[in-house]
Amino acid sequence: MARPLIDQAMDLQQAVSGLVRKFQFRDRNETVAYGLSVSQAYVLRTLSEHGLLTMGGLAAEMRLSISTMTRVVAQLDRKSMIRRTPDAQDGRVCRVALSARGQAQWQRIEDELVAADLEVLQTIPSAERETVIRAIGKLSEAIDIWREQKKGGGES
Image (cartoon, rainbow, N blue to C red; front, side, top):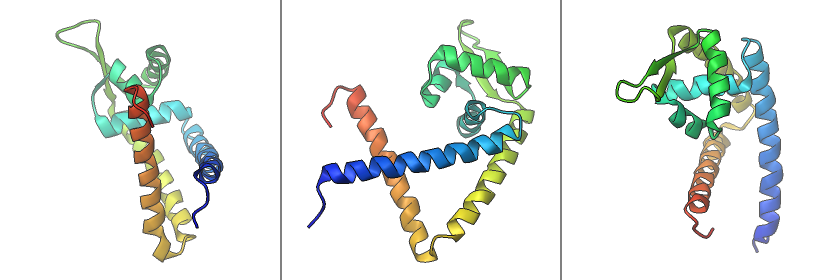
């Protein structure tokens, strides 16, 4: 018989909290070594994945306010990690992309994170690795669905 859903939800909360803490510390250790905050590194990652974004689009991707995003982008601009371009049609809109320096910096960080993930995956039996990866992906998708339902006023 399956355990009650509330018990599973409590176990999920505990497991995810522990995993997030461990990844945050790992990310912090890697990014601080490059003179970046975790937020700055996530901006580099987001711009690497999406290319040119408006400040509003970047803030939405990062789930941060535009004022917070503006501060983080200004810090990256001072480090020559990003390029800001005014929109041709609307001068109030600013588009942001990685500079060559920012792309190179993100690539170094990503290479180290992937190397660490390789070592972590080697501790999981090979027959279980794909299952673990798929489960984390499904969890991420479920969170996206839940957020969309909440945003749209739908019931979960």
